[in-house]
Image (cartoon, rainbow, N blue to C red; front, side):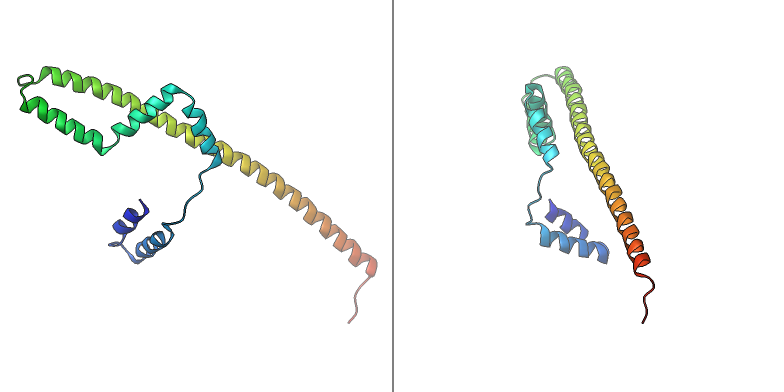
Length: 159
């Protein structure tokens, strides 16, 4: 995927060419999965309904799905399973569209759940970092007060 991104950017401006060169150089690096998303995927995989919906969505979003339908429609019309205006085929395709739109919504809900998991994790990180920053500020203030006390007790320095 990174390579295809790099190839599409080559014809654009110099910045894009630099980005594409960078993408090509780092395309071999394995990115570590977010542990929260891995855990979310495990929880989702525990449900048989989720596994079925994920597989259907994955197949319906593939080129094999498109090729299968081209073959199916071509055979249906070519072998004259029914005459024009293809009422049964139209009904079957309409029902399929209804179900596929449902699976698209399920997929969108899954993506929203992933985004929410990431947002929750990021919010926890922000809270932890804020707490650490507050502690660091308190330590810095203590160091400042100690430094002032040392300077006050040693008196003015002469050169």
